[in-house]
Length: 230
Length: 230
DNA sequence: TCCTCATGTATATACATGAGGAAGA
DNA sequence: CTTCCTCATGTATATACATGAGGG
Image (cartoon, rainbow over all chains, first blue to last red; front, side, top):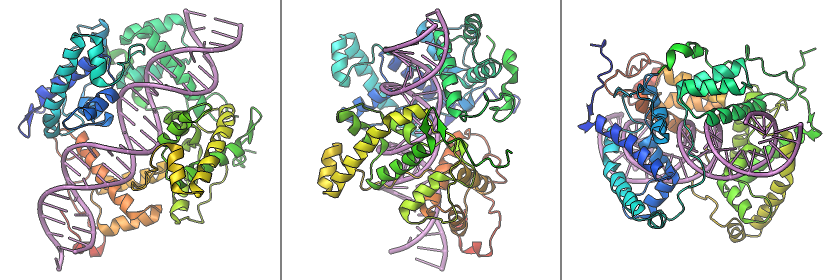
């Protein structure tokens, strides 16, 4: 029966994992739709009555442990994409995850709290931005772009490109962005940041880090072509 | 001859790296001595006139890139130890590091700012806790233990112990703590946290991640009998 | 339009705490 | 009654993505 691994147990400790997973995903989308950060939600929850949770708790309750997704599942990407309208229809995320970053029991417990809070926030939002601002006590981050979260698979591919060429041409970047289904600008910035990091990690007198030798990240980056595909 | 690698370049861009390194280390010690967190320093700096820096900036300017220390150098550990009076005299940190996490130029630039601020904070502290509290705008964290920072080397050893046995006996923990020169309690807590992490990462139906058998005692010392197995 | 550099902000992760329980003995 | 456990959760720090100035 191991041959059918995609049917993950859907109930643990009497908690419906599927439901929790869906909720977590939906919650993230709703949060982002309102333009709120985890920190803001955490603070607002603390301010409001009821149990309060830190940013870290929101994170724990919202994150989907990527270790338990197959390469193709790439949920983060998909969530992001669906928000920017670039949803890739071939990229469904079969419910094969195993676990959230918290225990199911714990998830079950705060689910209603988050649900209630979010419903309220959304109601405020509908009745005018002013109300939302008041509810959460501070500006929703209007201007700043939402922080992109690359999937481990995307990162592997990006890094393997980087090792071959730290300065891809405009053309190449467009291609990479398309292949990975991320915004081109986001990919460009990723390379900028990656180069910065490289610089910090490179000893002063040393030659430009031999990408062949010392710290090659993990060998497994090879199957870029088959891996992500859409 | 490369056989003398410990003479790292001590000047880059006209900046004395040695001096910066020393400063960074000393700054951290001074900060900890006052019982302040990076966040507090960041906020206090923002509040005071002059350029302001976030927690993240303080971190960047204070961290010593561990990649560039030899295993024996273990600066974090040594700093911690010197503060708790458990300094290990054999553990000197030869100045062989290469670089901080920022560019030397940048370090040079804020050094005086940090220096000035710290001097002021220390002066306040000497003239009474009240003054310091006022200066930084909030309580120095009195009660909470300083967060321990394990060196990569220590973590490797801890993890290798963990893989052999996730529940070391009291005896074993004492030995590990002594060998690594960390507080025993800190080591104990590390194992607790490590086990929690393991649990979160382990899929529900799955067998306990193949670290030898479940709770096999890995019958080590003779006096293990006195220990609470299971 | 794209780069680098300095630096910010958001998120993830590692260490710490505390409640409640089991067991030695 | 001390010692160590697990569990939930907090806080401090590190890191990854974003921004903006200045340059060509």
